[in-house]
Image (cartoon, rainbow, N blue to C red; front, side):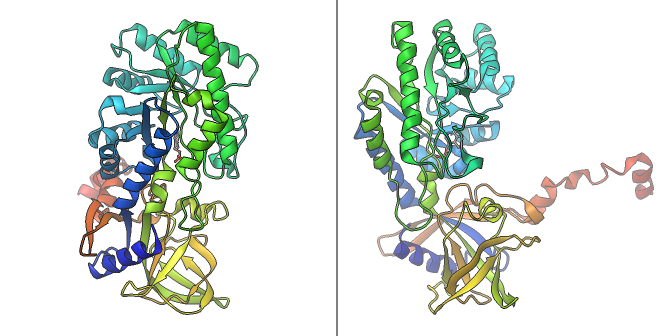
Length: 449
Ligand SMILES: *Cc1c(COP(=O)(O)O)cnc(C)c1O
């Protein structure tokens, strides 16, 4: 989202009463921005291959039904990794042939459901492949949907350990370079003529493009080896995962999808020569820059001569930033109570959240115009893995999410993507209907008397 668009949207959100005493924090999604990112992704791959490409959005990055419906309308599929994510994708209207199921811990019931629905599955490990064998032998999923195996090319991680999927000891997939693994993978495909896909997801925030391309190169070489051993194009589709990093330090969309697709064309030309269909699974890079959290500054105080703005946006909407601020710094923009960009000299201050622990800070010693009670702060680039990955600390409610578009007249139109969670819902989700569950019979009888 560019500064201008953001400023207009923030002003409109404040003017239209979307930040209130009852809802002092809310999230916003730029619909036109999301559309343009999908268009950029599709164009980037269309420019390097004529083969069919399914761009499956990684649902965990923004698990919101209207977002999935928008992406579907723009031609995308969905990558799901839990029964909840699958249900969201289906609620958004995605047909089974646009859905891919990955996850490191699928139960037999999940696998059976996916096969029966006709959803593509990537098995994570040998035990899971054994379960798939049993289900296929039992006649689940006739015809058998596209099935593949996830491998870990072990090309190494990026700068954020917790997100690095391609280290030598990563929990994901079959570790390709472990003793005997490669031979076993080739053998496994030869024994299963119905297995037609091969998958890796080795990128992540903090990963260099060259290393991502190296992982895809390893994946491609393996597919070639399997097909040569099979004497036919058994693997017809390669699922290259997602993991394109996002620039959290400016409004630039770097690296661009075209940069990555261009690099793949250069480093792994055979992947894109038309023999292989592709699946991609981008998440963060599609949504991050199109989301903003707005929050009111409730109080402005100071401690140890440090100014502190106490806002309503903290760990519940920015969990990674709060717990790991070095890996996940967020840009913060300052607005006044009318939603106008705040002017004034930069002053080092903390931007704190509402949760009851000292580390609940969106930004520490950030140079911004001095914030006052009633001002509004914007946490930028929060469209993926932030407000949509709510963390229920302090029973803070999930905030409302609004989509926005600008009309011909320059006015901004908001639509509700998700209602704010109510206090009543919090009580219900916290065992409200089971009040006496721990009291024991005597005690609950005593209460009843
Ligand atoms: C998380 C995940 C993705 C999406 O990753 P991004 O970094 O959001 O692009 C894709 N595929 C799999 C298997 C994942 O676990």
